[in-house]
Image: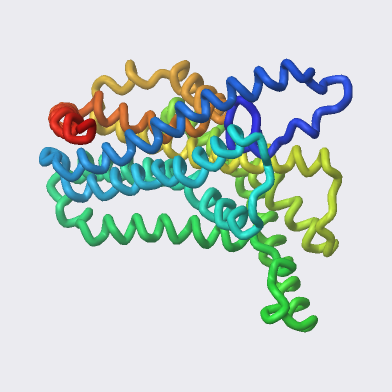
Length: 362
C-alpha cells in the first residue's frame, strides 16, 4: 500500500524496494505517519458522509424515485469501499502489521474486488438514466420504471460478483470439491478455446475500429476522441490481460517472472479502469450534445475532449478512496433540496446532542 492509496499501488510492499532505494528508519516513520493520517481522514469521511447521504436521499422529494435507486446504489458501493477497503487499510497501517487471518483476508479480497468498480458502473447507470430522461422525456416514465431500475442495479452487482468468481482458480477448491483429472482437462480445453476466441476478437476488431474511425466523416471529432480512447483501452485489455491469460492457459503454467507479473497487474487494472471511464466520458459527451445542442461545439471542443481523457487516466494514480466520499459533496453542491435537507438534519442532530449531553454528564 503506497501513499497514493491507489488500487494498483496498494498491493506493493516496502519490502520490494531494492537496496539502493530502501528508505531509512526515519523516512519510514514519517511515511507511515503521513499515511496513517491520510487513511484516518479518508475513512472518517467515507463512513460519515455516505450514511448521511443515504438519510438525505430518503427525505429529498425533488429527485425521481428511479434516479434515487441509482444514487443509493452508488452511495452504498462507496460506503462499502469505506468498510471493506479504507477501514482495514487504516487498522493495518496504525497497528503496523500486514498479517490478518486467512478467512478474513479472503472476505476482504472478495468484497474489495466487487466494490472497487461498483461506484464507477453505478455512476454510468446514473448517467444513462439522465440521458434517457432528456432524450426520451415523454417516454421516460414508461422506459425507466422503479422495477427496471432495481433490476439494473441487481444485474450490475451480479456482474461484479461473477467477474470476481471467474478469477478464482481450480487450485483453491478444497478436497471435497476437487474435480477429477478428466473434468479438469475438459475445463481447461473449453477455457482455452474461449480465451483464444476472445483474444483474437480483441486484437483484430479494436485495431480495425481505430482504422475505421480515422476514415469516418459523419462522427464529430470530439466524439471520435472518446471512441478512440475506449477502443485503445479495450485493445490494452487484449494485450495485457486476455493474451497473457491465453498463453498461461495453453502452456498450463501459472508461474511467471515477478517483474512481468507486476507489469501485467498494473497495466491490466489500468486498462480495465480506462475502458470503463472512457465509456462514461462518451455517455456524458452524448448527454451534453442533446441537452445543450446549440452550445455543444463551444462546450465540448477537441482540446477539452483530449484533456478530459488525459485527466481520467491521471485520476488512476490519485487516491481512489477519495472518489467515494467526493460524490456526496457533489450531490450537496448541485442539488438545492439536498443542501436544505442536509442542513436540517445536521441542525436537528446538533440540537439532540446538545439536549442529551447534560444527561450523560449527570
